Length: 324
Image (tube, rainbow, N blue to C red; front, top):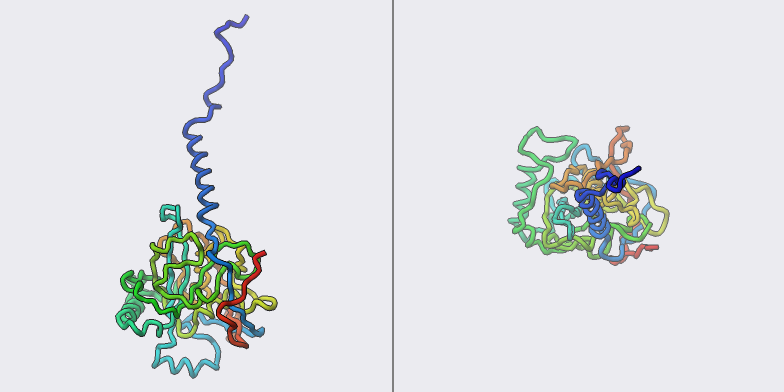
């Protein structure tokens, strides 16, 4: 006969522990943060400049100096050897995201013509000095000088004075639109961007905490060309092959296809520069593979193509992409 004091008991190993409950709560908390803070939704309706193109493409030579392989530009390039006004500085701007304790980051590429800084000789001298003494040209052809780095931070007291709106802002974020590159706004505000602007293409970037980094200079590839290289050239007909991703708003993924994947594509596949980033941690986990193309000399290279323009750009406001 069973004693009254010998009633069945539950094993303590089956009871939820305080530690397990805390872990579950932390996971749930991170999930909420990921949904609300890591999405990186674009701040406004996606806009693109309406352009037209033909089926010919320029192949960017990223194995050496960043000059386009187009014979019609030879005279212009020879002239630019004595007049570097045709140069374009390639910057990366870095923003922490709101409510992430400055542990998750958004980046954008900003491309500025040299002549946009003509009113500040000191700033131009700073950029030229950084290019000559600090930057290594590419990751494919690293410098033997251990003091060279793939990017360098631009002093805040220098870039915050640059209010001339001649730069092009290239960024990407999530949006409820499936069209090619509708996740990369390309309206008037983006194509007439000031280097000292604190505005990002997404709404949850901390503009006051912006940092700016110089990556290199191009002799001929401006910001509009870079956009067309990754997004094609038209909103009015079937799109040409895009670069790495379709960059639709619905293609956005916080880990595998985010804003930092987009900036890596521009830096590496368009400009032939390093896609290394300044301490982004888990925000930048994708090693971008540029598309393989064959140059006229038969050499296989990994780079993007720029559609050849056949007409001028339309109104700067651009064409609103369908979001449904």
